[in-house]
Every structure is written in structure tokens, then in C-alpha cells.
Length: 182
Length: 182
DNA sequence: TGCAATCGATTAATATATTAAACACTTTAA
DNA sequence: TTAAAGTGTTTAATATATTAATCGATTGCA
Image (tube, rainbow over all chains, first blue to last red; front, side, top):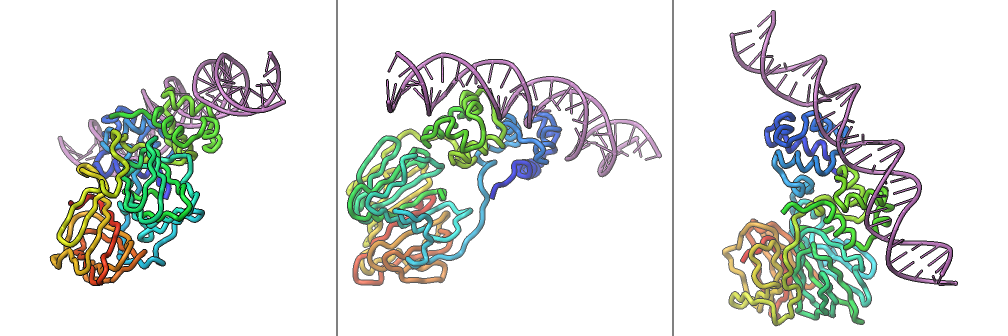
């Protein structure tokens, strides 16, 4: 799924209807450099790539965005949900391959003592959920709360976050995030 | 709005709980280079940045995503969910004002006999949910299924759809859609 | 037939990214 | 105290990105 910078640049440049020289002039770099980048004969510095993309124009984020694909299946029996990650946390994802989709919904079960980890990773998007059974300790960017049945959360996924079941019964949660995070 | 690569890298590295040397080893580059990047004393090639981000790990796309929102309310007790009631169906929305947000998560309860109507809702976006209790009849674009606890659905919201509780006990569902539909 | 103006690709020269090694500082343990 | 291992930073040497100039091929116009 690793797309290469060269083909991607050529693609967006041509989509914008610009020649290498036209783009080079708008971006304040040389046409030769654009040629080399598009052939992947050099890996531009992000400073240079920024200048080039500004000439198109397209944002870094959009330039590096993943690509899309359609989908069909609608209904999923509980044993058809795709299990994503094993260990002491069960992630049952609604739908199979979500690449190209914007929404990810999961039915998660946290065994007592389970923990998403201390590393507090962050990713783009928004994230929310409702507790169905048991209790879950949720930490977001320094704030912490223990949530029970019916309680809920909603936050920007870029804020570092962590989930732990500190109780002694399993915790069931239905969560949603956009776009899918894994 | 121009965020700089150095501070962003430092921020995500620290969020992942890694030292410059630890990250350098995982990424296959030198710690000195990471130091220089974080100080913006050099602009890495995208090839190098890719290696570094893979060590965290975080995608290019996420790395270049626009910056955080100011802190907002994260946790919601069940009596704090905002009720959007529609007749015999109870919609408890996670979060207050969702304007400008991309994700809407709701804890819904369908009383026996309740029905979103045969006019078949249709709107832009994607929609998914997991049944928590009871049974729900879901119709999407001609396809119909009766779903029970743990079952789920996922579809493009532009396909006409309808929800009915044809059973004799209340049905609880956690649903998500993007973007928010009301 | 030209000549002029494009196009993208290539090359030697040069600017800069990257490395390897050392620096100064803090923490931990004996 | 002492040593050892951790942190981030700095520097000279080297690898590579980038430039400026040129190339051959194509297109349009006289």
C-alpha cells in the first residue's frame, strides 16, 4: 500500500494541467528537480516538497492521503464480525475491509486488567463510544474518568488516549471512529 | 496554520514515549539526525521522514494532518447525553453541539412497535451500529434483516433505510454515522 | 522546409541532508 | 564520591538533494 512520491506527484501535477516547468516556476524550484522527483531518482526534502505542492496547490495531508474503494455487505451476524486484535482485548469490527471508508464501528470487550498500553498513541480523526456493560477507565490527554453502563466519551483522536479495565468483570463497549484507525 | 515538522515530530515522539535514540534505532537513522530535525535545523527528505515515522509508528497522512482543536468535554455520564427524542424512539447523543464535527454516536432505544417510518430515510454519509439488547428489523435498499444482540449493520446512508422494532421488548442499539445527520 | 518554443530528461557543480563521533548534562546504583 | 548509562546537542566528514545548463524530441507557425 506504500505509494511512491514520484508517481503521486506526476499524477497530481497532470491532474492540475501543469507542465513540469510551469509547476517549477510557481513553486520556485527547477524543472529538473521535478523531473528527478517524479522518476524517484531523488527523495525531496519536505521543505522542497512543500514548495512544490504549494504550486499545485495541494496540502501535504491530502498528498499523503490513502486511496479509496467501494463496499457492499450490509448485515453482519455477531459471528461474522471481523476480529481485529487478540490478546486481552477483543475488537469485533463491523464490516470487513474498510479501506476507503470513513466510519469504523467496533464491538469491544475488555477483560479485567486489560489495557491499550501506556504509549498513548494518537491518530487523525474523531472517536466516540458508549459503555454497554462493566466499567472502563478512559484517559484522554491527562483527563481520566471511570465510565459505567450508559456512560460515553467523545474526543479528537489526535489527543493522546488510553483505555483500561481496572475492574474485575469484563467491559463491553461499542465505539466508533472516523476515519478508521486500523 | 503552518505547523513546523520539528515540533510535530518531537510531539508525536514524546507521545509515543520514545527517546531520540530509541526512535533512531527503530527507524534505522542516527539520533543526531532526529535531534536536528526536531530543531528544524534540517529539512529531512521524505524518504528519511518515512523511516522515522514508521518507527513511531504514525502515517505520513496523520503526521501532516492539521492541528488539534482546543480541549472540549470528553466524558459524558448517561444522564448527560443529550436526548433527541422522536416519538417512541429515544436517541441519546454522545456530545452536545456537534456542529463542525464529523462523527455522531448515539445510544438509541426503540420501544416495541416503534418505526422510523416507511418514507425510508436517505442522506449523505455512512452509518453503522451494533445491537445491544432486543431485536431490530433493519431494511436497506430492499434488503431486510432482523438483528439480535451482538449483530450489526454498516451501509452507505444514501441507500434508503428504515428501522423497526417488531418484537415485544425494547431494543437498545449503539449507532454511529458520519457526518452527523441531525 | 526552416526557426522558435515548448516538452521531459540528463549532467557537472554546488548546496544541504545525514552520519559517526564526540560533547555536556542528568539520573541511577554502588 | 564514583562509574555507568541515560538524555539531547554539536561538529567535521560524507552522501545526497538541488541547481544551472544543456540535451534530443516534439509541436506550431512562417
